[in-house]
Image (cartoon, rainbow, N blue to C red; front, top):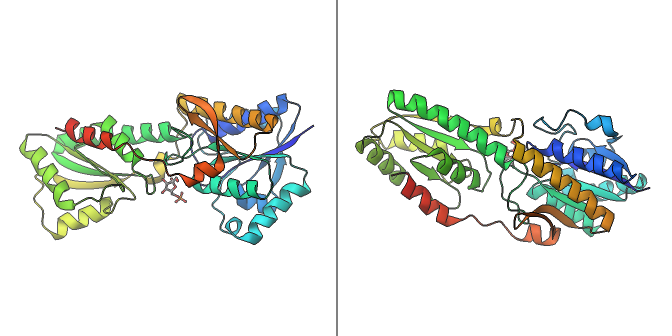
Length: 323
Ligand code: F6P
């Protein structure tokens, strides 16, 4: 009988619970013993392991967040921390570890794999900036939450002829901002990958106003050179005429907290099931992700070496559609 463990690490993402549930139930189906590690790598170092049975993962597929808890551990990034983590697994005879998380988490998974731990990653982050997976657990839900906010803001913006700067998450990746701008019909989008000039954004808002639009909506990525607050300050200091009265909203963690969409539940389930499949086949040091529309494995070394590129054609399309 194999003994495996599963942890969720980094920023939580809606759909992580579906992935844990799939790891546990497909693992138990193989007659393995499955342990959950609480609070990510911090819990791994501290030895927070709990045996998980079929009923322990009941009623979680529809819940956002992660019932195992998550954390960002600075100790794990040290040599000593990594050694403690390896020891904790070794002492409990763990023969396979599933790491559900994004870039930082999979970098950690790769380090464990280099230390001889049989590890499989599961692609999960709302940012969609992880190589080795066309989309990741949580992206769809986060996008839908951003869209719901954008749709509502447009309604009230139109009533008052206002412009809203809506700041979305994504760290240094503009995917969430660009996609929610296109799907939400925004007038402009500001992303980290393209250095933005506030003068141009002001001109776009002014032009939208002069063309008779009742609202102006700009989606701003949190990692852009000007975030929403920075733009408001700039417009105020430079007394920019925008036409519209200006307001700014930061969605922040609201985007991460929602119940997972059907898409994210299914993605988490498929990735989680694939992860135990790879462990069973002895395919270690890989990430379970979406490759050419199918669930596939990509070596973790490749995943962490290559930053996922943004489709800049969509940036051009967003401009055309904003007319
Ligand atoms: O990586 C997911 C993410 O939500 C980013 O979009 C954001 O920049 C970051 O995590 C926020 O991290 P924390 O929850 O630790 O503040």
